[in-house]
Amino acid sequence: MSNLLHRYPSFRNGVHPPESKADTHALKIRQFPFSPVLVIPLSQHIGAPAVAVVREGEEVARGQLLARSDGFMSVPQHAPASGIVQRIDFVPSITGKMVPGIYLKPHPGSSQEVAEGEPCDLGTASPDDIIAAVQSAGIVGLGGAAFPTHVKLKPPEGKTVETLIINGIECEPYLTTDHRVMLEHTADIYMGIRYLLKATTAQRAIIGVEANKLDAADALRAAAPDDMPVTTGVVEVKYPQGAEKMLITALLGKEVPSGGLPVDVGTVVVNVATAAEIGRLLPHGRGIQERVVTITGPAVGRKGNYRIPIGTPLRFALEQVDVSDNVSRVFLGGPMMGQALSSLDIPITKGTSGFVAFTSAETAAEEPEYPCIRCAYCVDACPIYLNPSQLGILAKNEEFDRMADDHSLMDCFECGACSYVCPSHIPLVQRFRDAKAIVRERQAA
Image 1: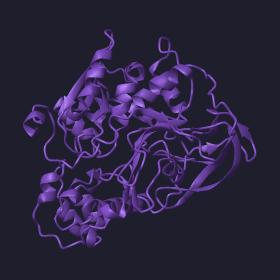
Image 2: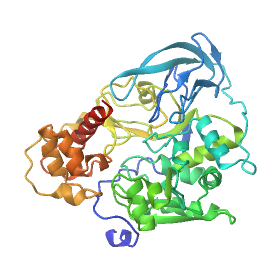
Image 3: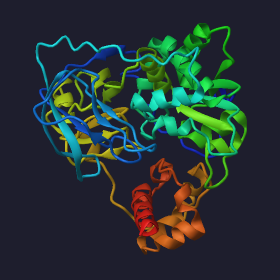
Image 4: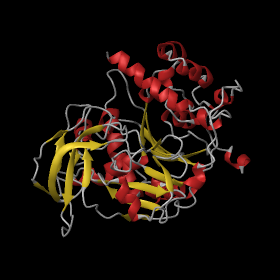
């Protein structure tokens, strides 16, 4: 099997965790019910929070604007359902902090149809028109980063985009949302690529797919329009193949410089589900109200891929899929790059690609942390050639400035490969995440 996979291009280093996708990769996307109350944070993206434009007690229609964007580095929020704005208050978030948000009570008897907006006409729209339409639709990176997509499409002065890469890798264990989108929504993906090519003025597009999703690669190739400069490239199954820098290396043989961005090598990378939403929403002038989420794990009775309204509380979602009584840990986004939750009251947001629930049987065998033995397994695993062992020692000693200035801490994208291979079970990626937050606070101050 490994010899077969090594026929495909990849990057150096990385790891091979169990894929754990067999339970859901063949399950079609199903519509999820509305929860009694939807909890909609005003910040579901990197950048400035949106600003509410509705008032408490107001009746809203599905797809209606709830909060406008607050500047270029911000996106609006739209109503996931027709209903009543119960209150505008603080809502729980993945960070553990309460953040501004809107509580919306859906109308039980509503048809929940979405009204047509002002379409973005692909034939007449300029690149700036498309970028503005993407922002108006509230679209962010649906792969998990939640970076405002329209910002990516506007390269800095002096930079040009030659290649658009559509990221269909989905290397995170357990998650299969992108896989199902590639199989079930190919027309939306290609419509989204048309908008993206025109917005970026890129000369070509490549859809990257891992070798464990050959059915998706075949479906995309079969549906490819003859008039589009688009190809599908299959890459090796390896983690973190789906990281932007790794995928660019695998498909183009280029390396994004330290501290740089994909546009520095003439590339823009957009998640495949994000491209599909652009193709689905812009022709109708609508905003994003829902997204596809994988719900899986040993503690889940009815695993699957579901199209879920934004703002659905995780507790409600788990109740709908028959979660086990002895659920002990839930990861939002998957076990490698995701975060273990301290509360189930947080809502599903635009960046939620999935959540994985484990029982006490799987978590009981967790090993205690031991001192670093300097085996260098983490160095061999790191896809961007950092020294996680040294960084871990500096983090323990709270030498955060040295980590950033002398050891390229900020290049770390928190893939978790170092933690995965560490025989001492040191939570390296968590220490790096905390250290980066402290460095950013110091820089801001």
